[in-house]
Image 1: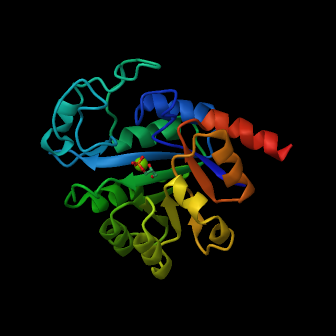
Image 2 (image 1 turned 30 degrees about the vertical axis):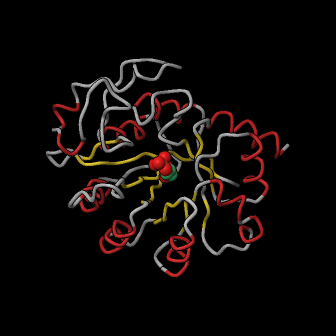
Length: 244
Ligand code: G3P
Ligand code: MG
């Protein structure tokens, strides 16, 4: 069954990459949750999509030039007009503890945001945190930046690793040729372009961002391993309808 992975939490209904969004993703019964990790000036693992705080908070500047204490002053929720609320920028550890407390039993996809800024040592810090205790859910690593995936593989052989890309043939080829890459996370357009190859593709396919009903239905009918969606509740309803 195609896993429904809540993209940046339930991004369509709650401010992305906040505890409220992850809580909502668990509440609706998402099979998986995706989040993005960047590094602060004082080497703290921060859950935020952009390299800057400008779009999703009331502050300005680069995540990597601010300390955790400075980032914690910001409001990362009221910018979201559809459902404004005060939210702090969470650390990765805070999200992990929330998922544990919420009894999340699905798959956590940790996307390492190193394609624009190659944060020194971020892979080690993430693996160290993940290994620091037993988490009662599955987790996997993904990135647009191949070198991050290689670094993860050097230090962590037990978890799934996926390559994230848009439509690039080169990235696809690299993922296919690299044994430690278990899956690909392409842009949904890739699925439509490669319909004939998808069924026999030798690695797990979990495209993003699958928000339209027709896209969801296609992915379910193709039995893809998963989809990343901003609307997990809607995706769960559609998957249920198809199964009945
Ligand atoms: O990990 C899948 C997807 O999140 C990749 O794109 O830009 O939303 O992080 P982005
Ligand atoms: Mg992401």
